[in-house]
Length: 277
Image (cartoon, rainbow, N blue to C red):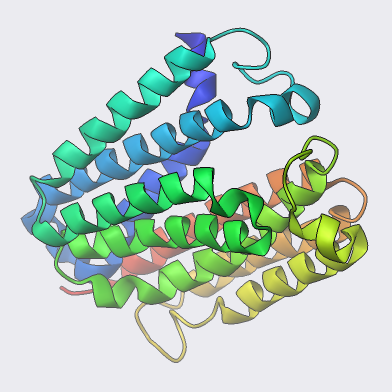
C-alpha cells in the first residue's frame, strides 16, 4: 500500500484536484453549493487521472529512474512494473467513468486528456520541448475541467494560462535534472545545452510571475487580498530561478511549493471576491 501511495505522488495529485475545486469556485463563487455533486466528482476525476498518469509515467520511465530516481517504487522493486500498469489502466478507467456523470464536456475533456497522455508517453516525451508543452497543457486542463464542471469554463482560462507557463518552466528544469538518465530521449537540455535550457526555464517562470496579477487587474475576478498572497508565491518561484542553476532538484521542489501558495491565493481571492454570487 505504501508503494502505491508513493507511486501516485499524492501531493501532486492533490494539487491537481485542488485546481479543480479552486477553478470551480472562481467560476461560480458563492453559488458553489448548486454544483456540489459535479465539483466533488470533478475533483476525484482529476485526482485519479493525475495518479494514473504518474503511475504510467513511472511504467515507461523505469530505466531512466534507475539512474535519476532509484528510490521510486518501480526501480527500487517496491512494486512490479506490471502491477503499476494494471493500477494505471484501472484508475484511468474509473476516472473516465466518473466523468460521464458530470456533463458531456467534462467527459470529452477526460477522454481527450487520456489520449494526449498516451501520446505523450509513446511519442511526445522523446520530442524535447514538445513533450514539455504537452504536460504543461494537461496541467492547465485541470483548471478548465473545473470550470467546465460548473458550466463556466471560459472564466478559468486565465488560471490555466498561469499554470501552463509555471509548469513548462518546471518541466524543463526536470529535464535538466534527468539528463544523465534520459539515455533514449532527445530532451531540450541536450539540444540547446544545459545553460541555455536553464535560461529558457527562467524566462518562462518570470513570464508566469509577470502574468500573475491578471486575475485581479485588469480582469477583476479576484478580491485584492489575492495580491499579497500571490506576491509570496511569486517570490518563492523567483527564488527557484537562482537555485536551479546549481540544484535543479531543489528548484523543482521550490516551484511546487510556490505553486501551492499560488493555489491558496486563487482560493482566498475567489472566496472573498464572491465570484458569481
